[in-house]
Length: 609
Image (cartoon, rainbow, N blue to C red; front, side, top):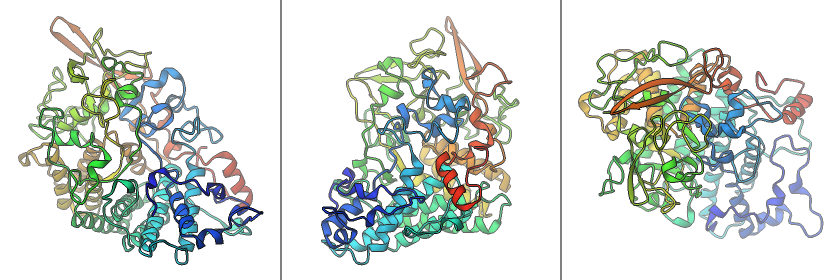
């Protein structure tokens, strides 16, 4: 049943062009000669299965599958700069503030091979989930045990698509039934952000009591959701409910709620066999540490009753363009470099020996442009040897001047200094703007000779749930528990227990967990959404205003390092206009907002759009 679900059967897709909640007709009930009725579908076990398969449509690929291989959440955060700025589309339009509710670069579907058009697609999927849930009790099945599994999958997928919508667009109406054709839209209103998040949590809890398994063990069931996925979604939604963006008054009861939901999600995942990936399996030095190796793993490494990878909860099995080709460097004969790491991201990695941050976490820079670092005394950082002795996760995420790179069967050295083989250039699609190149997810010898072996996108992993619980624990007053979870993550990275992080106050612990999220979850889309949920909707995202890189000049054996602004030349013009408050959310597509405003008589469009 539902074999090879990753193909997403399209047998009855024509019935489902009813995705948005504003649909004025229900095509599912139209039955001209020769067409299926929904009664026919639910009476046939194979058609019921095909309908269920459609609930998996429109799951975003993420990774390098935003328009032209440019990961927008990464590119718009303070982690990175889009090297496709020379092409004048995608992220650079956002940098220039060129976006509107009628045409927004992030949501506009330039080409159907890339992730986009979220408003339409995700509402469509929510409606399909609602239809399935209303018919699950009486639909015909080939195996009766599928009924409870499908029920759990429908709840989980509805929760997932709702969470994606809320992260992109903010609070929305809660629609958990199939709306009739004569539905009175005049009374429809947006729920609060907290109400939306709690509805997602409720769906996940229903899924956790369903017949879904905790882990997928068969390759022909790749991408099917599990109880583990439901637990991870619940973890994220509960944390979002308590965050400043929806909890501006810092209601302690919401943090208690977030802590309890995260604690239960974490405990259930641990008790059902999920654990951090801590053992380096490569034996010939292919990867420097387990963290680096983990992100090169394929989905198959997580598929068995006792897999090598017990950390991954849900991973995309989509084969992206080779990493070297769209995120590589000139040594690899790359087509483009894509998004390149910022100096702000590089600054975030601690010193391994002391365990201390390079910069003062309470005030990392002495200027708005982030050109003058406020160094943390006693960290051991040497500005003249900026890449020595850093957190091992730095080397797993960033390629820098002096990095070794295996190109096919040959070891080469990256030179980002002026005149080097991978030097920084301001108008090249293949050369970095910032002085750095990305490497997270890359196969260790990704090149023309060894293409297609890069790691897959991990929607959810246990490491993120650790830090969700750590944050909720600290905010709920369980500071020691939060610090213990942070240190567990740092131990996996390679830090000695002798340099464990400690804190004497909640404010300090909050800085530590946010700092740890910035590093552990770098290049995974978390930073973009984290900064938004930590900031009130009427406040600018100041950390994204200016972006910096590193210019290196070499004279003989001596190198000089100079921090530089990227995307601008002075402090009068921000690097990214997308730092403004309205960029917390995408605008609701103009036609949809206008239609709902006509029907309801109240404003629907997000502020500023």
